[in-house]
Length: 380
Image (cartoon, rainbow, N blue to C red; front, top):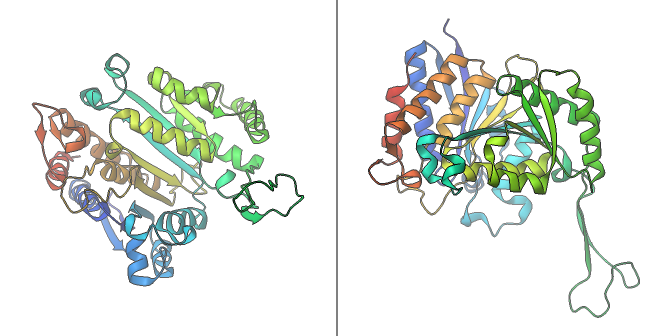
């Protein structure tokens, strides 16, 4: 049965518009193969929005997103805007507020190392020759990134920490990490539900030997796990997790992380696959664990890559796979999502490579050609 959906398209900066065009190409193929209709509503975000509208996240862009079923997001930022005050820079003034505004509390980042791309991984060949598949589930709207107070102020002489001999201005900075049981429970249930569709293993990444919030996480997750007896649960400190990803990535199935730990671990896991250009992500909202249609934001794991922007050599796979996640998690179109993912795998297995994943005897292609090869393999 065909359906019609409105999708907000926020291409962003740098290579964003280039790779976004290839994702839309794949979605147009889905329209033709499955009979759906996608109305793509474009809006500015990030540096380009600052240049055109004076703000990284204009109200008009938010209004556009409110009128759509989901958001297909590019990447934001670049050297042009690095001299702005930190709270006005695209990364902080666009992405974090849009997550908070729409309550996008759950970040899913699948990191798949295809056996045919094992050569691109920085890990030892014997560790990745058969590939690996890890899903990082990251809590996205709590923790130290959003906790209050968050400030820097001046110390007065005589206050604890004041050093009268220092030549530097005496300041004190505070970041606050806060988590409620409700915040932990909703992301935990999502992780366990995801594990049931995979290898039924969840690893909680924490620092319970040091942090009170991690003790809270561990206690809450342990209690929730009793509702998922078919899923195994293990605990690992974040420093050990970082080491074990390098030593034995195949050990992990679903890695459940609070916000800051998930930010770090998901980038490490992504890098272990061989290229950030291959990694998508999904940020989901309040109904994510219910099985109902879910508003979300879908974006590549990498950045704007300003050094290669406009050269036609960027890898579009992460953006294309982000479109597949949009189909699966937001629009509940599983067959359509699987069609795009299969097309990507077939293209890679057939030897087509952008420069970041190229190896001798493979077909080196540019952004548009890679998108063409994937699109023509999308089928029902």
